[in-house]
Amino acid sequence: MMKPFIEGYPEIALEIMNAATQDNVVTPHNVYQQGIHQNKAIITRIVNELLLPGSTIEGFENLVELFQLAKDGKSCLLFMQHFSNFDLPNMYELLARRGSEGEAIMNSIIAIAGLKLNEEHDLVRGFTEAFTRLVICPSSFLKDITDDEELKEANIKRNAINMAAMWQLMRLKNKGHIILVFPTGTRYRPWDPSTGKGLTEVYPYVKSFNYMVLVSINGNTLRVNPNGKMEEDLATRDLVIYSVSKVINCRDYRHELDHERVKEDSREHNHHDSKEFIVDSIMAEMNRMHEETEKKRMELLAAIECKPE
Image (cartoon, rainbow, N blue to C red; front, side, top):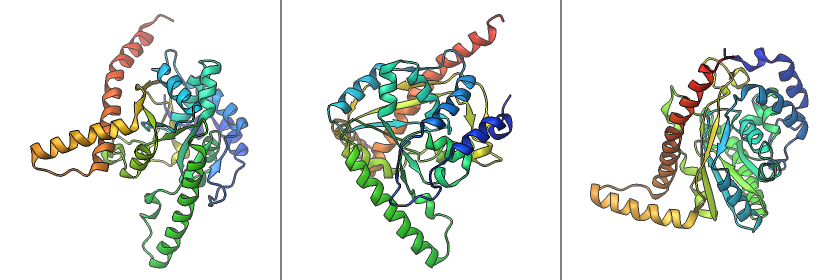
């Protein structure tokens, strides 16, 4: 039965909120934020309770290959679907179950995160602070501002934060790290199809990195509450499968898609924006991976439900 996390696990929620130690205000001076081990240990307890047997990472060997490239000084990118604020906690736990190799990959990951996760609520910030990240200020930060003076100040803040984050990214991306990006910039909500569209703002990552993998997610242990805020998301037990694509050479991938776009434009007498075409192609491939894995996941769930106690 699903229930808001803060109601279903009040003691753990309190622990996480008390462990939220970093500033809830993001500035250019604190955009790079190291994960807090204490928070991760608390979250791991609940993750283990919610992940059903059979939860796993398929294509783990592809992450191993990407990590080796990162250790060799290549810039490496992980594009991942986004359904839940437990997407990272679940993946990190499943990596940890792979032993020292999985833990090394886990510790190499730096997630790109929106500043709302720091400023929304102590519980959400506690979740977020468990994992090392670079905080950015997305364009959605400006969408509800109507006053001209306020908009001017918000733009100054956004530009300063993003410039600082990009400087840190340039500093870190060739030093053995895997940079994780959610290309939708938000969690997918089934009632709002726009939340499943990739943002063209992520194109520069594809352009400036050497290698990448795509990761689809099936299953969700902390579902978006359509009637509540982030701290009221719905906790539920589920079987979660992460599917990792083969390692992709970003330059070759861009060139192949550019050729495909030109052919399609010629055939349809149309003109696709090159950046949007590449981002849309990434999303289409992750959706294809998701649909393929969901068939298998449903069979596994049926087997679990039919298994005698």
